View 1 (cartoon, helix red, strand yellow):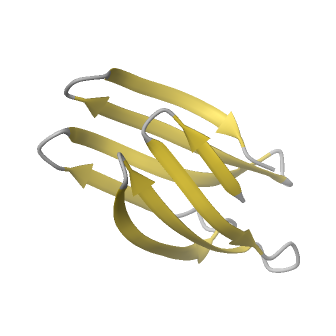
View 2: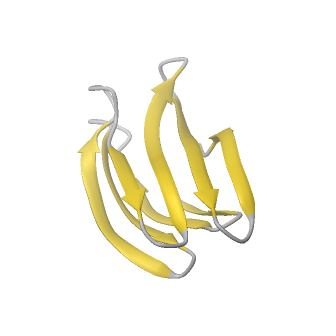
Length: 88
C-alpha cells in the first residue's frame, strides 16, 4: 500500500493470507507511527488531536476481500476530509 489523499499518506502492506496489516501513517508530514492489526477484527484505527488537525483514520475490510480506508480529518487551514476510499 502506498496511498495519499489530502493531508494523509499511508504506506505499508497487507498479508493476503492472514489479513494482517502493517502501515505507517503521516498526516501533514507528521509521522504518527506504525499501525499493526488484523483486518478480520474491525481493522486498526488511529485518532488524531493536534493543533492543526483532528479526527481519525481507520483501515477496514469490505466485501470480504477489499481493503478500504475511512478518513475523517478536520484540518484547520484546509477544511474537512470525510471519505471512504478503496485501497486494494
